[in-house]
Length: 426
Image (cartoon, rainbow, N blue to C red; front, top):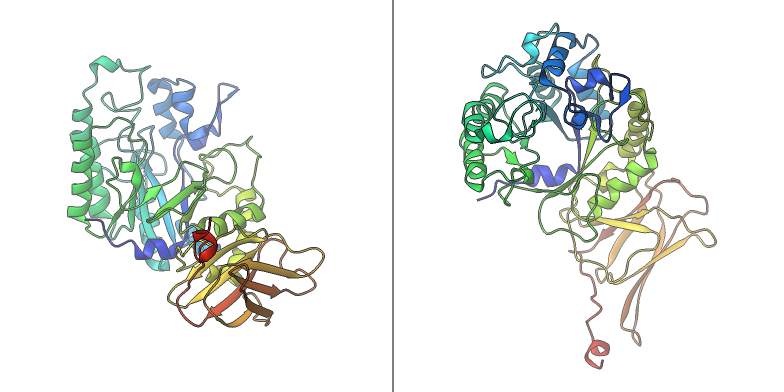
């Protein structure tokens, strides 16, 4: 039986933090830029463990402040934070007794995961952890490292029972309440081991959600492919993990940054289909969030402060018969509010229209200011169409996403194209 996902589906916006030894390299090794994403630099550039492991002795993020991260996430409108406790390279940001390859044996010498857990508890943020359950390039029996270790000599179950399970138990025992645990890259991990991993999580923290990348549909919610939004609404709790540039780990030469407007439109688009946006931050070796990330997210935060209501607590609703040429919609069933996200403001006449809303509207206004807007609802008998028209201000209030609130008289009802005699006669 799956856990209750309500807090998760209400949240709509979360942060994931990719941080580790790869942040020191910043995307380059011996003068060469890494191909693809920088958190995979050890594997993609076939760096030997003898050369990569010593990076731990350089790890000393003196400017790191967990509370500053959490406060920024709150300011930006995020509701939960996922931190990489162990990525594929095997290095742990927490005080694990299972392996000495961890943050306690670095010049920094402090448990970063505890710092995040404490900061989240103090600030009222849902704290979550990422753990790479199959890949571990430092462990001779973990998956992924075939340049230091011969694949035929690997005993994955030895890694699974000797490192993976004990470390997951540490994470779920030593850091208070965990909102969710985010597994990754299950590949061909045997289904019985995935079930056992799930059972361990649910035994220690029954309400801790498990993401879909545990494999075999054993998770409490689904993860979409990285940086992808599904074409159609998905029936169930889901999340799209996305980056602000092209890499998840810190990369000093990756300047392909998203615009704040892109983040906002992704947010409303994902929420309109019932999902969450999990947005990545990749700190540098000193523990600092890159300045472009901060600038982008500060702008997103300003929009969220005025318009976050149109996302939080919204859910999937009956699909309208036609795509809205001007944007998309979100719906809060408890409040009986339909939110119109106007992404393409009308140029000639400040009016938008939609076909199919049966429920009567009580009130319409701009979410950011409360300014009333005029609307009309008509039923065209000959074409059997419910029609809605909303008149907007002559000047566009928000160049990215102007949100109009429609307060409905009852639960939302939407006309379908196969209703009425027209469908019957064809």
